[in-house]
Length: 335
Image (cartoon, rainbow, N blue to C red; front, top):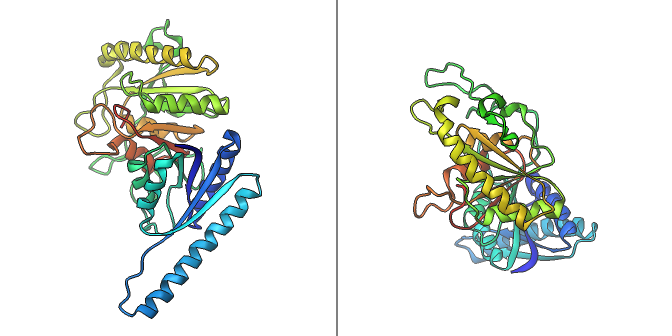
């Protein structure tokens, strides 16, 4: 793979935001940008009409590409531009075989109303051969609840429509000498601003961990290792109490400590902190995206089903996340 950042562009506002992110990253790494714009094949019975449509589609894609190229080169980024006919996801996945990082907007111009994650973003994240960063339109740090599924924000509700609050319990694992239950606070009161967050699945040291550590090193930012313990049963809003989860807490904390030690050995200049939560992994990680600079996920976790390329946790975070999110391919990473 080459020191190149792959970026899919389509002229949408999300694409523009992804372009901004990619330009900054390319300058920091001193890498070049490969800009790719696609247009769909035209199936029209009349060959003359079909050729006319194809030409117009190519010209539109080229115009989008020219605009993006000018913006990147204006900030001293080396670029190569490609206009290709075909399915956008397939084209980008093929290009990812020869690049070290892919970047895409969370939603493109073809997004359906109410759809939080576009098909190209989800497809590339699931099938890319290199780490993929999904960039939302904006990083909103004010919201504290998940979307209720109707395009509005509000408190989650149970099946009877009654309001319920689901605040995961936080233990300050950095001060491990203190009793865990004396260090309780809610995740809503914890900020990961200016941090790179990595989701750690049961102490796993996979590709996602090392990509996150490398990002922290390159950007001179602290690395927050986030792990979640607790078994969710019955009501979707229910999780183990602090008392019930103590045995799991000690075991998971020990695993997390070993991961921090491994990171310190390989990246001595990166300041790593450990954070252990009780709750549902997807909900906890979605909350971290409200303040984090970047949240790093794996494609699948230890409990992933064979054939499922993008696990349920990663899918949920990509759908609802508010900060840039990196998905790293590889086995035995958080789903």
